[in-house]
Image (cartoon, rainbow, N blue to C red; front, side, top):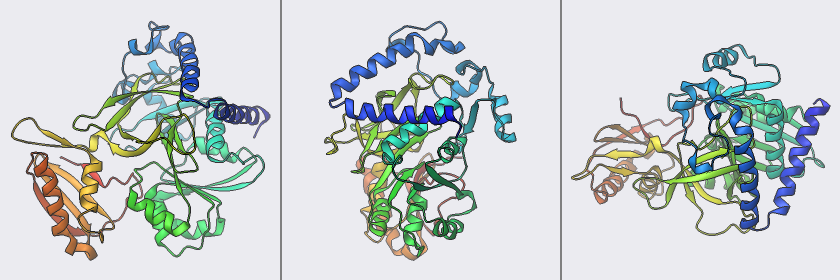
Amino acid sequence: MNPAAASFTLAAFIEARRRQMLYRTRESMLRAQERRLYAFLRRKAGRVPAFEGIRGRFLQDWPVMDKAALMADFARYNRLGLTAAEGWAHLEAGTAPKGYAIGASTGTSGNRGLYIVSERERYRWLGTILAHALPDFLCRRHRVAIVLPANSRLYDAANESGRLQLRFFDLGLGSEAQFAPLAEFQPTVIVAPPKFLRALAESDTQITPQRLFSGAEVLDEEDRRIIETRFDLIVREIYMATEGLFGIACRHGTLHLLEDQVAFEFLPVEGSASLVTPLITDFSRETQVMIRYQMNDVLEFAPIPCPCGRPHRAIQQVHGRCDDIFTLPSFGSPVRITPDVIRNAVLKADKRISDFRVIQTGRNTVRVELNAEEADCLPAAAASLRALFTACGAAPEIKPVATVLIPPSDRKLRRVRVDIA
């Protein structure tokens, strides 16, 4: 790592650790957040064309943006004036403007998102993650395995630090293809989607990681149980998307939002009293400005404070995406049923169910899939779903299917999803 990059990373690490120690109460953290947020809104936020005329307003007076608006006019939201077409061309060629990195989402919803960050932002991201996930990295060398469908220049920052030995494992080649290379590398830290961590836990791969981090997908409780039982470790989530870094779990396994660098507003999810979807304003980013950006994630707040004592808001679970909420006809208005409720209905039907898919395939049709060796659980699963839908006032046709369930290697695993042609 060059001296400037090392300096940025170390400064970000120290600053994140300082904030962890400084903000002992939620009130003190929110006051500091407000100061940084409004300094950002008064000055840096207005440096992109989309927000030139809005500088200085209260956050609630800024317009809400989303992925469609961002990608339709990408150049207006970044300081380089880079168009989406130019961004995709850079990505395809493996290039980027000097001093910047370009990346994209996996496009599980069919609408890929693009991002651009500066080198300074990239190392700030690294320092923040290290402060929360590997606070001992200055005195202890870690071997970190990143297992994802696509590499990113963001991860290269860690390898360039000189304090971490990081290796990328391409999940696009299949989960089993990575077991032997992982055993050879013997990582002390693994960052991977839960589908891979579960597959690794169920394999006979001789590996003894010291820390496990789950990201990129919903971490179901059954997956968590299997992974933690095998490795005798708490699985800690990293809540990160194309839009930014939003949360990291503490040592107790509780996911905390990074409210000292992102301001969160929450919109209620229709049909649920306990779930929300966030609007994010990231006041740590300057190259691509994200203000009141509406995420597609469904979050549930933790009902009690985390024993770690952090003042950052605790999240019980990231349940999936708004796109995966079932909308079914009823006698009155259509009913909306969230993925967490559907997931629980299947799992409680029979304790032998180890994996499943529930897919809304039409306006009033739902398919439930189980592995062939668990086919005798299908009637119970279908009955449990039918009871759920009836209680909600819906009566879709349920089609039970016994099949071979293989987690996809090139996209996120979504056990509950809407797939209407």
